[in-house]
Image (cartoon, rainbow, N blue to C red; front, top):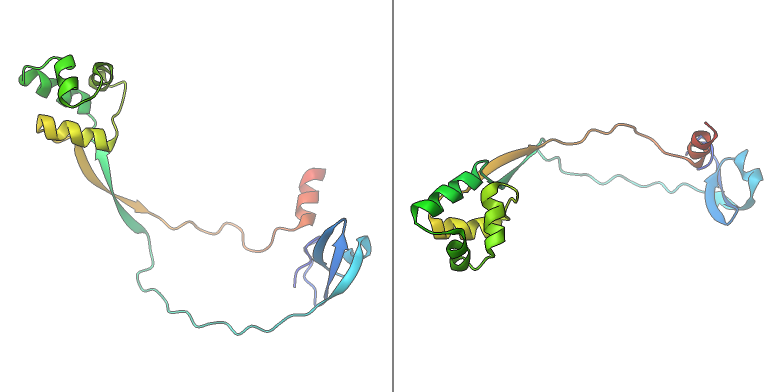
Length: 154
């Protein structure tokens, strides 16, 4: 077992009240507080866990707006012979928002992009598959109060 204060691995730990906190500490560190009781280890039988054969990175499908969305929207609107103001009224949005979208200063949400797609009959959203990799464990073990004290002293 590992001492919460100094990080020493020892056979016997003591539950000790140190400045209002109950910690499991070794015999040396127990002198800094009031010993409440000795810590006893309960033997726990490990449960059998089924191994997942599909271990590895998970894939996710994400909807992404195409890079040249502003140009596509402007060209299609002009092909239909609509002014920004008329187009905005047809899709129930503000003209200033349409202007910002067409100049590329505002990227519309997926919901708004779907609305524009339906009206202009143009493809603005594409699916991409994103691969997420499992994070590796950098440090195994315990972080103790002693580690914090050492960090503060540096």
